[in-house]
Length: 220
Image 1 (cartoon, rainbow, N blue to C red):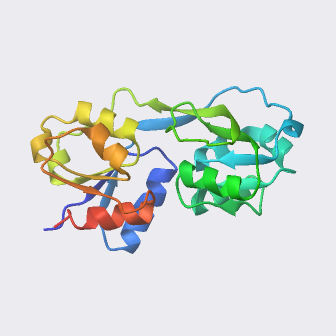
Image 2 (image 1 turned 45 degrees about the horizontal axis):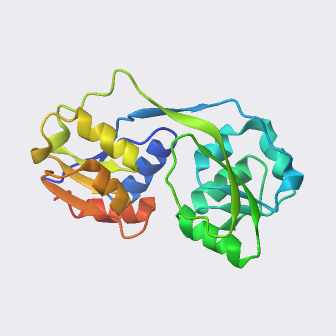
């Protein structure tokens, strides 16, 4: 019998992952560990920058009307989903990166960008900006859902871990990790989950498609 996936990321991303899993013939249950919420922010003068960097679709969704202050800047989205979220917010024609902030920074550097405004979450992954001068502005946070969803039956699933923070939170919640299979979106996420899992897979690239492909092998 095939094990269903356990999707722990916040909405609306959780439902997007569930739909992608269904297209692959994989069963999935959605039990978010976090809920996304906007945070107040003071938009800096767009004239100080020569590009806008967005590394999460949630940043595009949560930035609010102030996002349009940067519509005249070249737009750089970490991946296709983030570019779609920008388009829905009214900012189109974003250049699409390779799926991670490091690769997106390299793309901007090759394009001759130097001073970047980066709209992001409070919890974000570090990367090397190189010669770029990047001002990171938090526009959202992922709030831990309290109480968390029940994970008593986690051993009957394959848990999808979309971030190091999710990995740490999940590891703290499961009753017995030695019975649980996990699929991580990156090596850093797998490392954050720690050792002792029944089985572990790591996505070849940091995106949903690769994560689902890695998880599929653990579902049998």
